[in-house]
Length: 400
Image 1 (cartoon, rainbow, N blue to C red):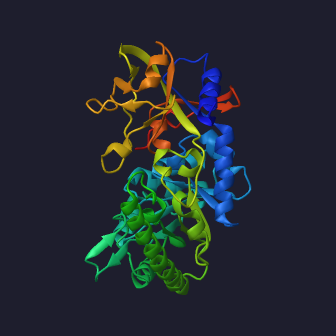
Image 2: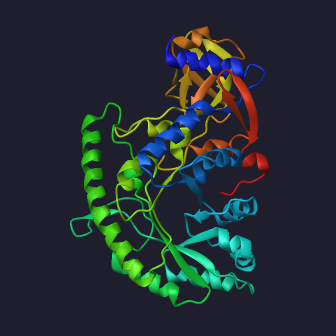
Image 3: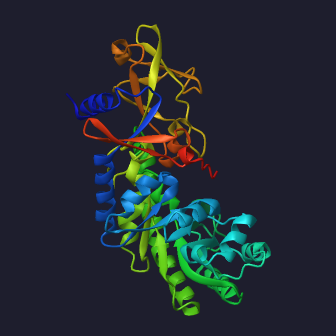
């Protein structure tokens, strides 16, 4: 029996009492992935990206481990909810226009001490000030540095369209703009290199493309390491008491951790290891989060149909954004139908061994987005479900 076949047998036994659709997290794999992130971080603390977990119980589990510290959140409403729930260090990774949230933040000393908000332009400060509604608490601010690689005089750009602050001088000027405003304090810098951390460099069946990605990423790492260090020096000249410099992501942990200017690493997807993280040469993890759909039809030889399963991930649309049939091995989508909202045909010889009601296990393309489809995660240890915990959705929280 292969390792994957053994996992399927375990998951089927563990969830035999549960009807599909059902979602699980294999705690042995989850903990092993956490260990791997810490190993690659080489002693620097890892801030957990909540967007990639979306389950308070699992956030608490990983943050209880030495080496993990703080949360990187994705909306202001989520940040405030987590802070009210007892998480004491929450960095909002994206600018917000949540006026009601800023009014709450500025009027509550506990929330203002726990939550740091992201800015990349003075206009965002204007919005926060206009939203204070009389609140006088100092708002903790993190500045975002654009990490994109620019070549040929800026005519070629590789990287996400994020902050307008690309140069050390631009970031330092933003720091001065914040320090001139009463009611704000610059406490950190964030620089997320998504074109390195979030792009696999070993694309199956595409050796030339993979080689090009590796060359691009090597150039991007060199350029960013120099520019990030210069940006940190420039901002520290304005704000000597800077608390943290955050960088990285699951796919670049070890590279970012090697930079002296970086004080902490962000990661989250590496805990669940969704399918988009299969294509990296620098690390490998164990799939920890899976979901199962039930077989409901047998249309013919070599075909079964499962209920639902069409859970595409965010990003540029394409086959790599779809969940992948994982267990039993050897199933594939019908190219005419793909993954459907209410039914999904699956082709392959393993279909002939599946009966009505059997489970087919899938891996999502991304990590936390799976939790928007399920209210609970069943935590598996060995071949037993040892706990069932709510996702954000299960707690009535859908932030985006």
